[in-house]
Image (tube, rainbow, N blue to C red; front, top):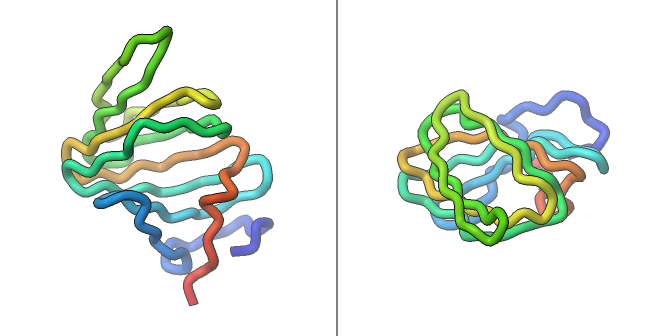
Length: 120
């Protein structure tokens, strides 16, 4: 994928397994931002983690329970189709799909580990 590409077709992007039952498709990016589509099988889990990039997301379909830590306390919330969220830079968070789900996520700045080669 050319990092300066303004148009990206899902059919041209590889789907990468991130965790069991969780896959990621990187749609577009430059140094400042990155857009990804995450798909979850029912019950799939993203373990608690953090990263430098702020993570802004929108649940397209399904239902996902997110967990985060704020002021030393664990918070859990369920988001469904049309619900959004934001995890600031370095905020610990994780997720578990309650049902098969699709989530769109924007990372700022981009996450270099999510740069993939275009599918042949």
